[in-house]
Length: 536
Image: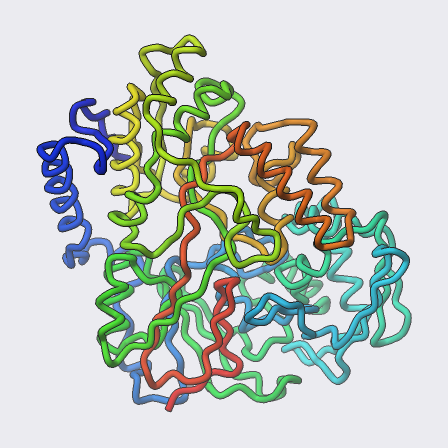
């Protein structure tokens, strides 16, 4: 754990408004910082995580094996208990979902080949694909779907999916390939939930046989079967030759974790890795000019910023939340730290999605207004807090920039670098002031905005407002999309005043792969799907 002390107020400054002398000093400091972040000496880190891919395993000339580089080691291989975004990169090979999304985020059939919504949005009747088997040879059918739903909904199991299926009242097996789900009330995000982990089907037989060991040898219906795992090194899956959706191209896929971004990129450029799921912002321009690499860009569904602890000082005080929101120069962060690989965020709903309202603008930096708000609230000399963030180069740079910006208004920020898992534990235990962390996003806006703002939200850290709760509950039962958008606009306008979370940016999602990788479809949910991918 490393702690940076607060900077002197004279060092911080609005880059665009300071004197030329101040401007030059800041730019010089930032250039030094960028040089440090862009270093290539990562041997100690790569020994601890990921390592260099075994070149005897596969190279870019081997068309039977795909090597995928991930930004971290997936912690959980059981989708019903997963809470990490990186898990889902692997899940799309092992598991199928009831429904999927296309490049425009429309819901499309997967294990459910069609569905009907009746009774004002309360009843969903799914017709299932026929002839589908799990990797253990057992049949996928309506009974299996019922088993999966009941497993996730079991309060004793403690599945994170339980809240996503909480609206279910009854589950009826109509026949072998038809299942009817009745909700207690209309729940507009239901299909969206089934297009993610709540819709991923696992083998009931394998679960009963393996028990708690299921996560170490998972069984789904997907295009690839789980083979083996060496933690912090690799996960291997092999072709499911009997896949109901058509035989995939690769004999096997090897997923390798590279938490160190420089190591991840180096392995791609050397040919030891075929595709990576995250590209360091500092390397985007370089990859654009690399003739051996395809760089694919898509808008992402999530948001990035600062989680605030509303249960204790200083951020149980709305005025101090507002003041911190006003000191952040989003465009400077995007330009300097993120190398223009993001757009400024105004709220939980990203551009390009149906509920986005362009009339809601990102907060503009205003130091004088921040000072006035603090003075009116009884804090004329500012306040202090600790900002926790992960120990990665871009995160360190973000922390230092926020620290410098806050100092202009008299806000003292201690920047604490902490291991990712420990950070999450601290958040769960409310042992933090603020955390630099984002949310990967969901296909329905409810998965972003309800989770963050509602009193019972899964990523809400103590914020509670009865007006906000009422709006978000209303949006869930409203079945008309245009009306839902109006409700979400009201919720975001309220959030601009309340500042439950400080939005900084919506990241753009980049996937980089060797030119001989063919057929890759870039879906905005950021998850890699390899069924239709091949190597030439």
